[in-house]
Length: 266
Image (tube, rainbow, N blue to C red; front, side, top):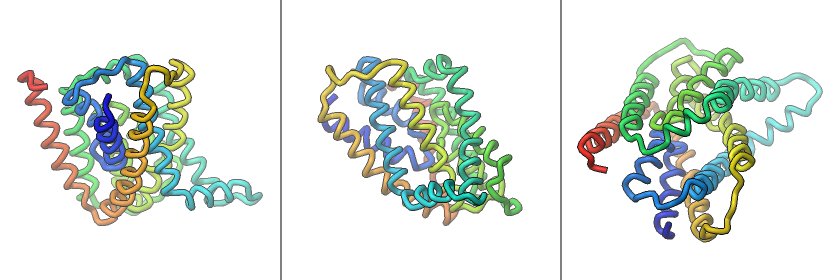
């Protein structure tokens, strides 16, 4: 993998992790277009590095919120920080269960199946469209709603379904205020990504011997920096009810990759 390719994949990860267009789906598309010359272990290592970059960019962006939450947790009196922390833990349950019991099935989906990716992009498009135009009664992030949002996060493990798109859309459809929905969506995934990274390292082991360290650093930095801008942009778009733009984008990209896949274009 050359340096330009590392930077490009980092930028794609940084943008698509926060924008509602599916990071996993776009990485699969990118690999198909650019050609994936990495071994399974090298590909896994690079994927972990990119996901760690966007996880750290999320932590950096919401550092004040996270600091206030941690401060609140250690106060004696029960407060909003305790509620928020419990809600995050509840939201993780569906994805953790899916990851533990269906890991092999999930891994088999990430094998360049672009027809699946295109089909799931249609589902992402539908969710984004509904979130902009459905008007429901105002609601809060209750424990029940946290679990329902967590279900959408578990479904978003499928390549082509945007995690941020699915969780934010689900929250908004449930009646949760838009900025609050975006904030919860981005923070709820931090422990899940970090936990998944640790599990992958323990299961497969990580070796840097056969990988260009500069490529890893360039991929990490490009994903981290791009992620910061994409996170801020996404929150602004959610507040202004502009997600249907991405709905159109997902439909177009989904149609293109299905067409080319059926005609052996990739």
